[in-house]
Length: 304
Ligand SMILES: O=C(O)CCC(=O)C(=O)O
Image (cartoon, rainbow, N blue to C red; front, top):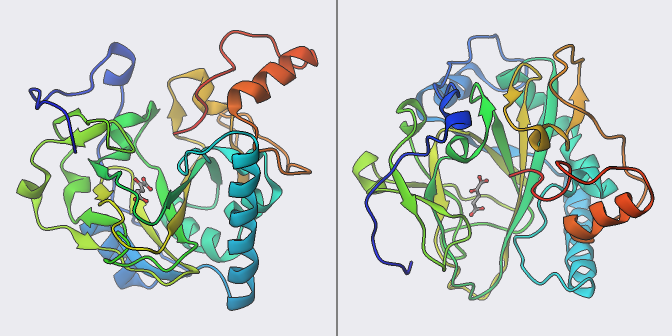
């Protein structure tokens, strides 16, 4: 990681200060996870490995991701981390977010009403020099209370050699940790101060087709990929409709996965009909030209 060290600081702009970033133990009786897995989630903030895709599905899903990355490159998008929020614009990603094997697990954590409000492919290419510094997702997100659970689905085998996800167990119960702005060689821009002072990281090794879940308050990250194998994971962000977005744009890319929503906090997309991987900027400009939206407030940063 490059960059001159700066003093630690907390993210407390006014609108973010209203957030409740305390972890709440899951107290309901699980139907898919075992009781000890829920206890593990409560105590350590994550669970793995879980099964998402059968062998046949895995082959099809991996070729689908390859196809999306090829399409993105053809659109001039070469950043392998840029597939953010496309569950509402690509039917295959929508279907993955709707996958019963994943939702059954998520239901045990968030309850029967489930929405997905964002997603991101973290495709670490062979030799990728970028790290994902240890960070807490909840520290970035203008959502309250912090109750988003990420399902991180391994599209490729993900192990220590190709820089699998790492978590620092128990950090989800510590509230927001002090962080500084990360350097240029980082995928995300927050970097927790002295992360190892909170405990030793655990490597979340997964076979392709498996997934892990993690709380939005757990410290997690990953190293540069020094191997010659790609490490692609698809992170799907789920919560219950009671979670409130504090910024309007963050409510606008959701899909309702199960149950109902009487909160009025979110607007939902239907299943998209065909893949559209054009940049979000081009997408909103197109909608504007078609007269489907007004500019101001809608464009730009959707999702994580
Ligand atoms: O895949 C990675 O290396 C990082 C993933 C991550 O930060 C997340 O899912 O929130």
